[in-house]
Length: 264
Length: 306
Image (cartoon, rainbow over all chains, first blue to last red; front, side, top):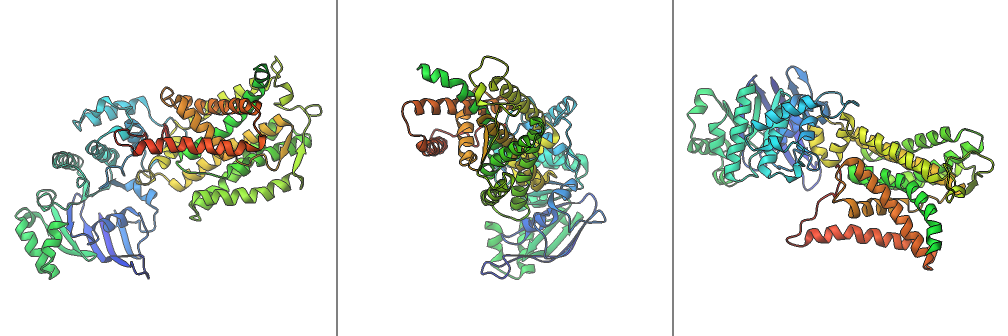
């Protein structure tokens, strides 16, 4: 499904701020995998997702999606295959455009945008139903500007936009981190529902180890720009937070790592 | 007072021509959320191309279309400099504007001013007819032109393509995540804006009876003034996109009427640019200051991408 082969990325190379974010990252995802990603700050989690999404060119390595080498593809061309939700609720939507306009933009992801009307009456009905599924009352606010929505509503909408056209891969970059606990739980529950319903191959970064254990069929831990732990299936379902912390210390060989992981 | 009334038709005509120009500014400033200083040059380019073609006996409508094409090209250069060469939008616009000064002189055969007389040529608009009560009055044609241009833009920004330009201005990161080519859309927006500005320049040159190398100086500020006056006066009531554009044109007309009035009160013409700049600075400051006060939330971006 997805293959990352020896991905390297260094930011600000040759300067005092040089930061090696990914160092020979290898990872293979199977069709239908729901992978949760954990790791301390600077471990390379977001950089990995951005490398897949094409936010920047990688220094070395290959990104292969469904057999196609997309390493050289620009960000907007790859978007055809990817659904993305960001940490910042402001980032995933156009605030000055209406809810239905945002959805219509997302529904045309990967398609040619021509001079046809930007949104059709038939679509409106579909959007109304899809929004009703979120259970946030947005189905009656199709023409409201997205800027008027709360952070949680925006994240739920972004999630809907990311999946309204079924992506090959769904990338969730700490998408509940900026929300209050109750809203975060709601958005996470929605994510789980949509992923299960559409059988989406998913990568979800989280800082919450309970969530990382509870959701998905596979868990990876990153440190220093590569994967240091990869647990799946049966073994994953038996994991506890204490196990994870112990494993992290063992693999990374650092006592401080516990705190780093917990506090970050 | 009667002097002002006499001057009113002229002020309205000029305001409407500048209103078209301000629509171009609106596209870059509000829809693309960028600043394009190309317009100071492309306005004169539009005027130069149109006048030189009319002088060589070409139909004024064809000349007007050619001016539009020249404006598209000017926008293309700025757009490419900005998105493909990584030059900040403001600087890219300044570079194009500066180079257009030389190009405009070339177009005008190295003369700073090229006259075109209504007696000799069949001009679309002329200040000579500003006071006439007939279809020759420039207000008639300008009104139709404004309605047609606003109508076309209303349609265009409602299409899939237009919506992707709006998304590019509203949130470029989101646009790319949704598969929108933000660089291409930015270029297209700059082209469209400068095409409209050049059309405005072509009409302005015909109206005043000559193309002038300096006719675009400070155009961006006048355009901004029109956009802001329109938003301040009509922002609360005009929510529809077409009405928002109409507000821009009305803003330009009001600007010219006020200008006419203060000139008649004995103000020096040379002080106009200073006064315009101060007005724009003040109106740009008000929403910012309001936004900083607790309890009063500024509407970010005004009616942008409406």
